[in-house]
Image 1: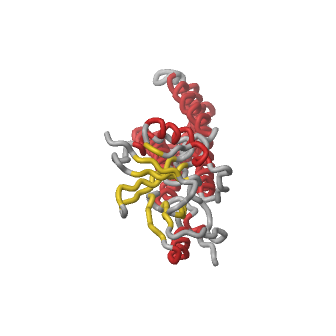
Image 2: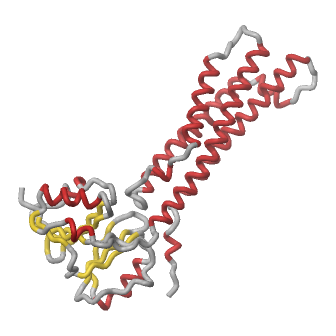
Length: 323
């Protein structure tokens, strides 16, 4: 059977487009900084040597300082605002793929280096002698500031490029098949009974070691999944469990890879879990043995999936107490 799971191993197209837009904004700001740097050097050369050969571009820059400043601030705001917005949206997007760690893929040494260059350029601007001072010295200060800015923008562009690759790899790794837990942590740590504070403390202890999936049942046909990633806080999911609901904790977390090598155990029925690739939503489906091939075909395009026999021996059942 052909494995077509690679179609789900990519970030959303909207994120890819936003990444290219941010890189274009950073590149435009860097290109404009190079232009200003060259103009500062050319103008300083003209004032120090009196060379009559002056380019039309330099004349236009000198005659239109207001337009230059406006364009400069527009490009500055576009790349700064675009970068911070892109980084925030990237973390939001990663919640659906790697909920346990959305920070590591967007970390890179280039970000603090770029931040330091922005601060250094600001300090240089504070020491600009300004109007009425020696023009040659003022142009020299401006050129140094633009050189620092160019270096910082270049580093940032490299950082965004690298972070894009890190994010893509994190999404691919999130689908890597996980080996089963040996021995099952849930069965070893949990006790059945009432889902009180002590029981949820066992949940917290378990998610220090592994992901944990639980099925909340409030009736024969009313089921929904709860998922707590490794290192996550179970308090948020506990608040969504109604009083009297039955909670079934399963020993193995959902798989994140292909389905071809998986063989269904003998069971009368299964609890099916699908984590949608687009929204990250956890979907429940009751699966009969005859429906297993159809379920597995659907699971190949999911972020994660699982089939738990309804009589899983290692599952732990507790009931949420009434308030």
